[in-house]
Amino acid sequence: MKRRDFAIATTLTPLLLSACGGGDSGPAPLTGTRAEAAAGLKRAAQYMDEVVSYQGGYVWSYSPDLKQTFGEMEAYRTMCWIQPPGTPSVGHVYLDAYHATGDERYYQAAERTALAIVAAQHRSGGWNYIHDFAGEDSLKRWYDTIGKNGWRLEEFQHYYGNATFDDAGTAVASQLLLRMFVEKRDVRFSGPLLRAIDFVVQSQFGPEYGIADGGWPQRFPHFPGAVSSMPLPNPQQVPAGARVGMADGDYTLHVTFNDDVMGENIKFLTLCVTALGETRLIGNIQRAMECMRLMQQPGPQAGWSLQHLSRPTAGRPAGAPAG
Image 1 (cartoon, rainbow, N blue to C red):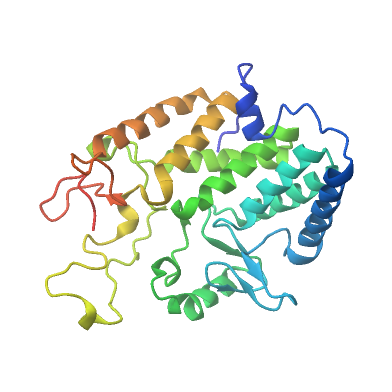
Image 2 (image 1 turned 135 degrees about the vertical axis):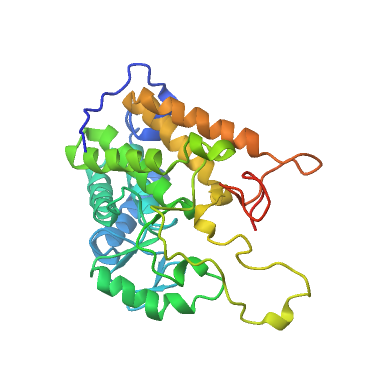
């Protein structure tokens, strides 16, 4: 991969500097209740960083003895959850605390968390919902035992081995790496950030997809063994003639609006244009916005479906709501 040197654009606005983590004028002196709040914040952050985290990574909730850990499903202690409010979300909180207080201890916690994000990055440049520091065999064992029993949680029932845009996992991880690089120009984050940018660019549907040009699939790279149908646990509860499950086959190939995939990717690319001077991404942003415009449904419900077809399917055109 060709490396590029990032340069902060001279036209950075204060708002974007704040969003990316720069441009603060410094914290005011702490007294009274503010001092007490700051002390409590630091105790909590130190405990989370030094005791609760696993190699800088986090899941969603923990039993007091840390023997039971949960993300959207039960997790191994060796896991970190990328899907919010997991590891990247905690990293953003640490970085916000650093800017609110000026205390380097919060930056150190954010740095450790960001390095966990780097370790969890898929080779394609994106992220899966979860990462297991114990290795891929341990992760596959989780999918084969805990994950496959996740009724209604189809994403966790099968090991895909790729990355996802769902639930803003890749988005918040990418945004944290952007903030960390902008903060102190640490080269440890420039390579992973570049890979994240390229992942968003390479996964975007191209002009050959017509109306789907500029959209994004739910998962990437495409996994040929992706599930294309879902058995019903209680078929007798479904009314006669009703369509359920994956009526249009492998849903990971559809243009995805669910969980603001389009909006989060546009936001990340826009931040990269403004904070890094990556003007090459403007075309990707414009194509995404045009895809949104073209896929808006006619009135009286002039909105969008959770997903839209990226290619003609069963006699319906690309761009039609997917089922």
